[in-house]
Length: 143
Image 1 (tube, rainbow, N blue to C red):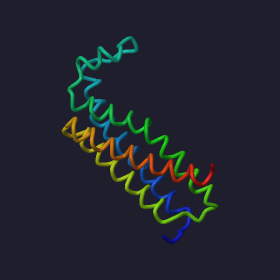
Image 2 (image 1 turned 45 degrees about the vertical axis):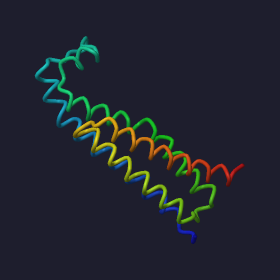
Image 3 (image 1 turned 120 degrees about the horizontal axis):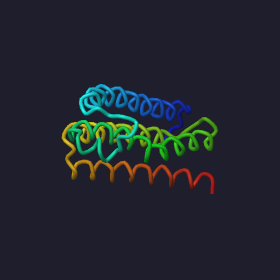
């Protein structure tokens, strides 16, 4: 496979971060009106809020939080691949990165709209597999 510039990995990083910001806006748009209705105070605990919050609003908040879990590994691995390859990355690395971003966006949409557990589980497993391949490719370069 041919090599391309580091932007082949920086683009997916920017895209996933942009998606995280979209989810943040969506979360605020849905959750703030709910918080106002349930009268959240500084003493309100998360479990008290959850008990009063409609499930679809929780799904968006939960997904936003999930975008700061596994994707942090993606950011680190993608940046490390770009650095380890000296700015000339393999096209496969870019394909894997863009696929990872696409799968995470799908995961967000499933979790935030229907929250179908098995679909989320499949998408999470698929994204984890992509991340494992990217990690393996990085390990082969640096170890």
